[in-house]
Image 1 (spheres, rainbow, N blue to C red):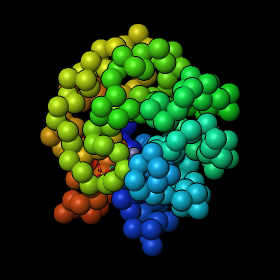
Image 2 (image 1 turned 135 degrees about the horizontal axis):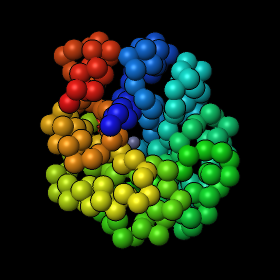
Image 3 (image 1 turned 60 degrees about the vertical axis):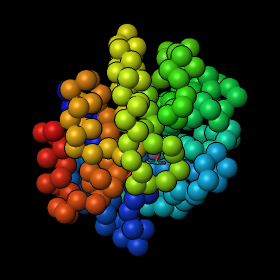
Image 4 (image 1 turned 45 degrees about the vertical axis):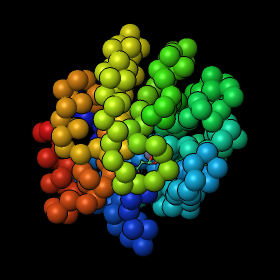
Length: 217
Ligand code: DX5
Ligand code: ZN
């Protein structure tokens, strides 16, 4: 099964955004992961729309947006207009997540659900028929470079089982390193947000080498 390797663009130095996007594209990543924050749902600000537009201009690969914002339905059209392909919403931040997911699909985009460490699978089970991608946060969202929370492994295993009839990929966001990628891949997880530990803080700085190495993990 091919892994979905999704570099987290918020980790990049914005001074060199264009060059870094070109390097990642050439290295063979699958999906560019863009973090959007409102300073309310999470206590930080993520990427700007202008930065997202730079990414869109310099790659034809899929872009996802991880919307860490309250009432995300307000910004779905804007994300579609920015050229995003996969739109992830937090159901914790949305009084009507089923409506928002349907709106995403009606715009011809892929609908993603992303849940916090403290949110249960039970609480989103009713949404499974609407989900194209399920992302599980393995850190509390808002900041780059935090450590993977190991107590979430049971939930990840359970998600892999539960999604079987639906078939949507499972993506892990937060603190992924080579050991975690190896262990979770063996358990059937396909997608990984690539942050500091596995991509940006490596001694090796050649993205092509790093991405090919990850395909073997
Ligand atoms: C955390 C973000 C992540 C983060 C991943 O709030 O959603 O996408 O940038 O990077 P690492 O794995 O370095 O935390
Ligand atoms: Zn993210």
